[in-house]
Amino acid sequence: MTQDNSETVSESDFRALCGRFATGVAVITARRHDGRQEGVTVNSFTSLSLKPPLVLFCLDYDAGTFPAFDKTRHFAVNILGVDQQGISDRFAGVGLEDRFDGVDLVTDRDETLPPLIAGCLGYLTCEVEARHPGGDHRIIVGRVQEIMFGEDADPLLYFGGYRKIAKN
Ligand SMILES: Cc1cc2nc3c(=O)[nH]c(=O)nc-3n(C[C@H](O)[C@H](O)[C@H](O)COP(=O)(O)O)c2cc1C
Image (cartoon, rainbow, N blue to C red; front, side):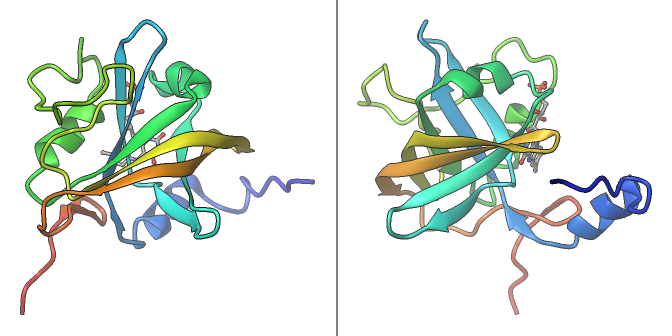
């Protein structure tokens, strides 16, 4: 049974506290049956299991991309580098006609597969293993099918806003 603590835990404090946990930033991509590409910026991506290799991300039920990610059998994780803040903003952007417009993709890939964004630090392609309820988000678990290393650069960090690794 889940307990509703919404009266004792203030939403703004909860947000502020969770914002003290630094993360990377990734764009999750997928391809719909009609071939249309979907992508959404997340910082809820994490590795879950080594054997078998599983990852997860959490998606808001209200996200415009939710219906697509709720149906897709495959998705890709594009791990963003420090120079890809514009990509992060684009795939978090509200009201864009096509988030992929002007975005360079990795070429030579089967057009039925989830698209990969060029210039990322690394990529995982996954088959959806499970979908779990998680409050106002859905937890989407993927079994990793393929991994690819990309640019050897610093990551884009999120910690109450975009950050980069400070060098001593
Ligand atoms: C750095 C960053 C991290 C985000 N992480 C998540 C996330 O983990 N899950 C999620 O559902 N939305 C996340 N969002 C919000 C989505 O990227 C997106 O803005 C939201 O789904 C609105 O898109 P829509 O116009 O398609 O509804 C994040 C946004 C940013 C900028």
